[in-house]
Amino acid sequence: MSELFQLRCEQCGRHFGNGPLVLCEDCFAPLEVAFDLPAVRAAVSRDQIERRNPDLWRYAEFLPVAEGFRSDLPVGFTPLLRAPRLGARIGSQDLWLKDDAACFPTLSFKDRVVAVALAQARAFGFEVVGCASTGNLANAVAAQAARLGLEAWVFIPSDLEAAKVLGTAVYGARVIRVDGNYDQVNRLCVEIADLHPWGFVNVNLRPYYAEGSKTVGFEIAEQLGWRLPDNVVVPMAGGAQISKIAKAFSELVATGLVEAKPVRVFGAQALGCSPISSAVSGGETEIIPQLPDTICRSLAIGNPADGYRAMEVIRSSGGWAESATDPEIVAGIRILAEEEGIFGETAGGVTVSVAGQLIRDGRIQPGETTVLCITGNGLKTTDALVSELPEIPVVAPRLEAFEEQLSGVGARR
Image (tube, rainbow, N blue to C red; front, top):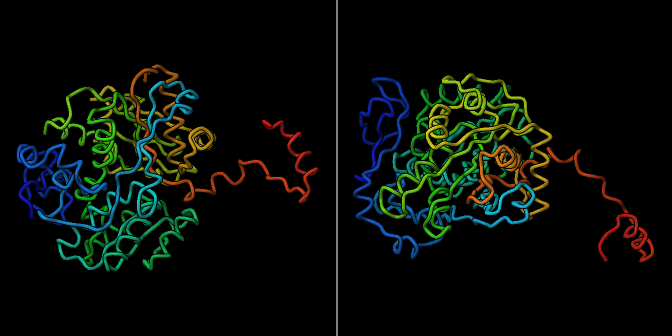
C-alpha cells in the first residue's frame, strides 16, 4: 500500500496501517485515514492536477488508494455552476451549485465514495461487497460492483422509493428489503460483516469510503480558480460528507494548493430526521437519535455515525445547522428546477430551503461566495412531487384549442 496514508484513531491517535477496520481496538473510537501531507505536497502541484483526466482520480495523492492505482471509471468532477436566478430568489449575490445530480454513473455523490471504497475492497481481496443504504448508495454499489465483476449484496429499508429500488436491482445486485428503518438495516449489516468475509462499504470499509467525499471540496476549490468559498451548505445524513468537505479544504491549505481563509460550514437536514441540526441549534453536546418521519429518505438516518464530527466541524468553522419541513423541501426542489433548470432529489430541496433560511436569518451574507451541494438527481425521488404539481391539461390537436389554452394561462407571446 502507499505510504502516504494509514488508518488512525480519531481519539487516541494510534495508527493501524491499512485494512478493513473501522474502530480503534483500544478506545473503540472511529478510525480515519491520515495522510502524510508534507509528502503529498512534494508529490503534486496545481499544474499536474489540471493536466489529468476530469474525474476524481485527478486527486489520487489525497485519496486512500494504492500507489499507481488507475481506474477507467470517470466518477466525479461534476459542474460547479453560477446560480444568479436562484440567488436572486433567496437573497444571495454570489451563489454557486455543486451539481452531483450529474455524477457518473448513478447520478449522486455516492458514486464518489463507492469508487474509493471499492478500489480498496479489491486491494484487500474482497470478492463480495455490500452496503446498508437509503437509496443512492445502493445504486452506486450495485452499478460499480457490476463493472468491476464483484458480487453485490444491498440492504435497504422496505419503504424505499421505487425508483431507487429499481435503480439498484437493474444492475443484478442481490437486494434485501428489511422491515425497518436505516439504523436497523445498518445494525444488521454490522452483524453480517462480522460473520461473512464481505466488504461493506459503510461498515468495515467506512474510513476509506468517507474519504471519497473530500473530492467535492477539492473540485469546488479548483473550479473556483483554486480558492475557497466563504460558505458551503451541505445536506447531512450520517454526517460524513460535511466533515470530509471541511477536511478537503484544510488539506488543500496544508499542501499549499490554496491560500488559507475561513470557510463557514453549514449543515442541512429534514425536520423529520434532524438529530445533528437539532443538537447544533439547541446548543447540545449530545446527539439524540430520532425515528425518521420525512419524505427525504436519503437523509433519514436517525443515529448518524459521524454526527459528533459533523457537529464539531460546523461549530469550529462558525457555521450553523437548520432543518426544512416536508412542504419546504418540495418548494426547494421546485425553486431549484424553475430558476436554474436543475432537478435535485429531496436532499437538494432540503439544501435550497435551508440556505434561504440561513440568508434570511443573517447567518450568510448576500455578498459572500456561497456553494450549495446538490447531492442527487430528482428522477430518483419523483414520489415526493407527484401530488404537488398541477394537473397537465389535454387540448385538441387544433390551433384554436391551443390559442384558447394560451389566453387562459396568460403566457408571454
